[in-house]
Length: 411
Image 1 (cartoon, rainbow, N blue to C red):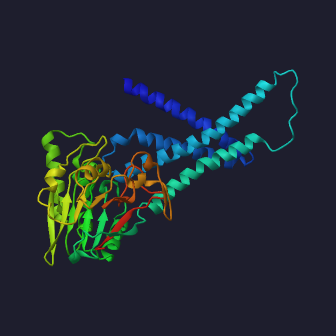
Image 2 (cartoon, one colour):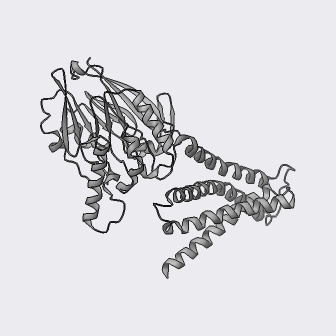
Image 3 (cartoon, rainbow, N blue to C red):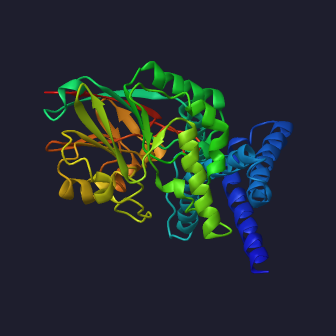
């Protein structure tokens, strides 16, 4: 019964908030014809009602059969809610002005007001404009930004790079999140962009799925086309362990993780689970270390770097695949000074921010010290990939999906 009361309270609150924002709409459309006003009013409340009912029915929609519908409903609801919250600030300011004006009538002498444009009309129009801007921006981020893949190229100069590997090109993708995709053609186009770079090695640094391995099934044949002459190597991210959903038993969860491992292998990816591989070329070696998820924050720690590192001690250049960038300062820098390069992802750059030239900003920086691109401490490097896919919000604004190409130079 408490759930019914909660839903009833939420519905009343939502309707009251909708009517509150409608005051700005009413002012703006006051000069329209009666038919137009009725049409716009019906549209305003109709869309709002449909989205609210859709959110209430979210759990009743089969996630396999109605995955895209569930994504559309929640995204549209929260985008419009953000717009209304921003608009409400202007409506609140106008109500504050009205209150002050009303209180001023009780003063002994009332100041004369200059005959100027109605501030209510001005603030109402400002409210609608301010509320529409985020809706337009986030909608554009879905339509255009979700699959606007960008190839970012970097060069690492290090005397530790074996001469046989001088000029080798590494490709990295991360955070695919197949459970969020809705456009197979665009996803395949990103794979074509990656292959067009003709990398010598390809690395995937975790989060193939959101919650369970079945999400990846429709995309296995697409990502199996990722190839490189020296191999494709992968590891696990925090979402790959199914920690964010309920399981019927611990055995069911472990079976799902095993199936995900098998999917990597089906695609031709050499999944590294706290282990390493030595790549040899012209008698010289390069080490690839694949660590299971390990971060300094609240996420579960499955990695064992000492175990992963064992056997690579004499290899002059070591590349660590570790999903969470917080791992770099927490363990790699202080305890493993000869790990030359860590490749990470995880942050997505929060899928929102600004990048102009060398200037980068995202709310992600408030959570992660290293959140995108290249970082260096002495002879050690960290590259944080912005992610190939998306999670939650099915789009990107400013921080676009990334394919990284890193060239290693012996110098």
